[in-house]
Length: 307
Image (cartoon, rainbow, N blue to C red):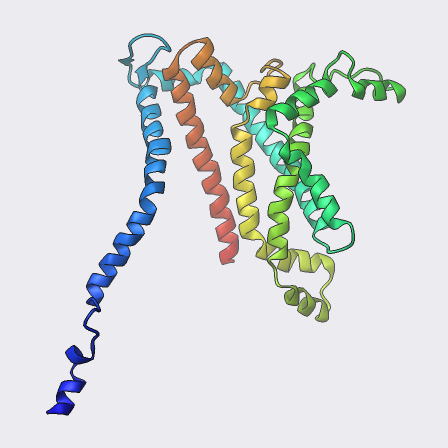
C-alpha cells in the first residue's frame, strides 16, 4: 500500500506546481505583457498613421479646409508626367547608388577586416562621415559643388580642365549627389559587411586553402554564400534609403534640372499645392514599389540559398 501511494503521480508532483496547461498559459500571458508596450508603439506610430494615409489618399484633403471623398481620383492623377519623371529618376538613382555604394562598402569591408596594425584607425576614419548629419553633409558638399568659389573647380582649373558645373545639369547633379551619398554612407554599410565577414568561421577558409582553393574560389563558393543574409540586409537598407531620398537633392538642387525624387514630389504636393490627398496617394504608391522591390530581392536571395 505504501509503495502505491509513493509511486502515484499525485504524490510525486510538488504541491505548489501548476498543471502544464496553466504553466503554458502563464508563459504566454507573460510574453504578451512583455510585447505589449512595443505593440502599442507600433500601432500608434505605424499602423494608425498608415491607415490615416490610406484614408486620406481616397479623399480630396486640402491642407486647410474640409475634406471630401473623391474615390480613386488621386491615384488617377499619378499618370501626371511630372510624377512619372520623378519615379524614373528615383529608380535610376536607386540602381546607381546601390551598385556604387555597395561596391565601395564591400571593398572597404575587405580592406579593414584583416587584423593588421592600423586597421582599427582606418575603420574609425571610414566610419566618421556617418556621424555627420545628412543635411549637414549635403550643405558641406554644396560648398564643394557650388559654382562660386568651388574648391573642386580650383583643382580643375589647375589641371587645365576648366570650371565644371557640378550641379548645373541633371547628370552632373546626379553623379555629384551619388558621390556625396557614397562618402556619407559607405562606412555604415562597411560595418554591416565587416560584421558578416567576421562571423564566418576561419576554419572553413583554412580547410578550403588546404584543399587547394584559390582566392576567387573561396570568395565565390564560401564567402558570398555565407554572407548572403548580410548582403540581403544591406540591399534592403540601400534600396529603401535610396527610394526615400529627399535631403540630398532638396538641398543640393532643390529638385531642379530633372532631379526631383518621388519624396520631393510628395513634399511639393503637400506643402506647395496643399493637396494632402494627392501626396498621400503618392506615398501609398511609393510604399507599394518598396514592398515589391524588396520582396523580389529577398525572394531571389532565398532562392540562391536553396540552391
